[in-house]
Image (cartoon, rainbow over all chains, first blue to last red):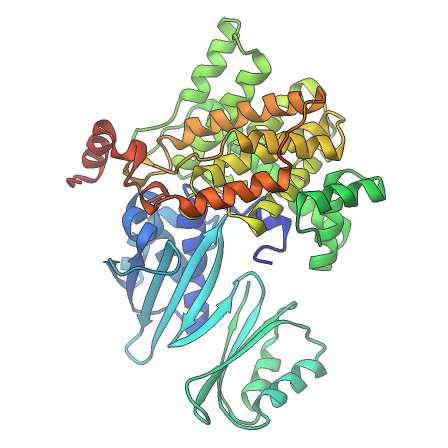
Length: 220
Length: 291
């Protein structure tokens, strides 16, 4: 089911004015930052459909940027996020995209810092709940409501087993898991939603496992 | 896990517990949390609602100046005159609009189920409270009952205006509130479901047409509509009036209507009230662009 908690319905506590266009946008921005692992220095933000048409009135712009700066939905500084970004050396460009999207509240965030670049597609499905639907060309489904780990790996025998073995050793329960690859034997992505937070030493152990390229953690 | 209102009511009846208790137990189960943890998390939301209403009754104004101050106006009217629809009704309306005035002013609120519809549940709660004198626990339970019904709508239809129009937002919020009022007033789980159905039926087809794309006009006053309808439906259900169309089928109808709604009437700010001469004028005035 799309929603599994009463707090998806009664909540979140947030800075107004719109749960999907403000709170949801902030959560997508925060997920993008967490996946990138650090604060980017630039962001190109493509907005689609309802997001594109009403983003200024709904504060979608400052909320997405607030999220990129690491803010929670109820951060009282949220409405000043655009100015704060400038101060923190984060350059922002908004693009109202006329292409159609599968969901009315869709955003594509391309962010980078001179060395690395990341492209993410997110949707805000209502009441502040969001999903990350694409990451660097990989399709995925990530609610953002649970801690999750994203693991880039080589599409080889045993890559998945080496990861799940470590999770089992630390008694981490997997709530949702997806594996995607671009082509047989090439780069692939594992998305694992877990019930508990994953500690850093476990991440290091995972990163050293067979066929693993890189790891990112999302804290819910 | 319950998927439909019918299942929710059945679970409450089988165990002989209120709807709020079904929701609390499910949350404890899903999140592997204790009753105290789940309860105190919800109580925090209650405090946010209480604070938002308090701010609203001192008077707030949005940045654009389109909304604010109406909650105060209604409270003053209640003191000076005798409202035709009664004090409880106008108190709910005032507190529901007030919550949304705080939201429009970018204050802190609790989404129930969304920000644009955040007034109906707390507005009715803090008005009905004056007559029913609930304990703090019963007030928190009000939110769990609202949440249980919203949970079914969110999983079977939608709760956002962008996805299903205002019927999905204020329609759901008002209906959730009516179900919770019934439980607080001592009605049965079945009567909660009836109240929910009757409110949502009267909200079917309502479009999401925010002027200038802002959560202000008509959102603030739609919360007045949603909260007043919530009280009327709760009274009807408590009187034994029943919806001829079962609750889950009303939710199904809401879903299909939302699917048939053109995108211009789903939070794009392109149709309905947004596309009136005054709506277009306001947008141009606020953003300085022609439409």
